[in-house]
Amino acid sequence: MKHIVSVSLGSSKRNHAIETEFLGEQFKIERIGTDGDWDKALSLVRELDGKVDAFGMGGISLYVYAGTRKYVLKDAKQLLVEAKKTPMVDGGGLKNTLERDSILRVAREGIVDFKDKRVLMVCGVDRLGMAQVLDELSDNIVFGDLIYSLGIPIRITSLRHLEILANIIAPIIVNLRFDSLYPTGEKQDVIIPKFSKYYYEADIIAGDFLYIRRYLPDHLEGKVIITNTTTQDDVRMLKERGVKLLVTTTPEMDGRSFGTNVMEALLVTMINKPVEEITEQDYYNLIKELDFKPGITYLNN
Image 1: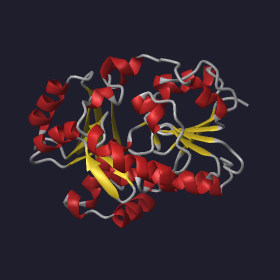
Image 2: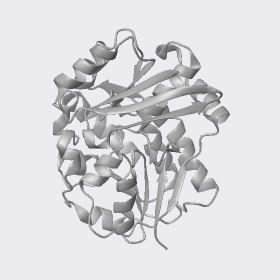
Image 3: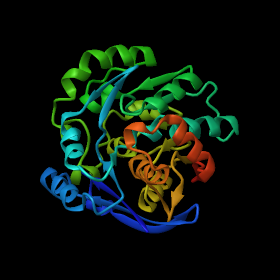
Image 4: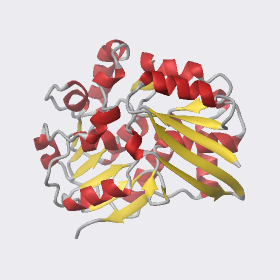
């Protein structure tokens, strides 16, 4: 049995483990949160290195994307270098393949109609594939990178503007403490309904779920949420707040949608190539063979 472990800087309350089968092979998939404790995360990677088949890097992304350029987050690199024997991935390979395909699929099948809809993507620089496809599908998009990452209430209204801005500020922010940019540990359990007007203005809200959840207003009647990493408790909360439709870009397993880092780690163990040699086409081919489909959950009429 192959063993995949996501070492996450997020809350341990979201821990989960399942055993499942893909293409006739058994897998144990596990998510271990360290409550924002960097030393604990580093220690866990050292302890499990060489004993598991693949690591997911959870609660943090390795790169910030600015068009064709990408910048390495200093804190994320600390985790990566501790995995000396076991491959570690942050989900970027699937953010640029599976997430893109999932959104195109729900648009093509008429599950989500993007025509004349207002789209809010809470943060675009860590999910390039999603940002690109939403920019293609929507004529009215807002990227909330300044709003939700830096607390600056300024809309970014095109992918091109996001790329220009990212190239200016990315060299600075990649050297900041990651927990100043993204909720980690216990912060993930706290909802601050701030900058709510951008949620209210949007018909479709997309991006990292913990960003979405962090600033979630009480009322979201009729909204569509496109995200992943949702638990059963998250789904209940979205239903209570009036969300119409939840689309998860990773397939549901055992009642929850795992993060892209977990799913990419799973695929890495099946492709049997060094991570640096795996191409987007390798991911696309395996995604097709596994018949991964987005999760579609209608919550309210």
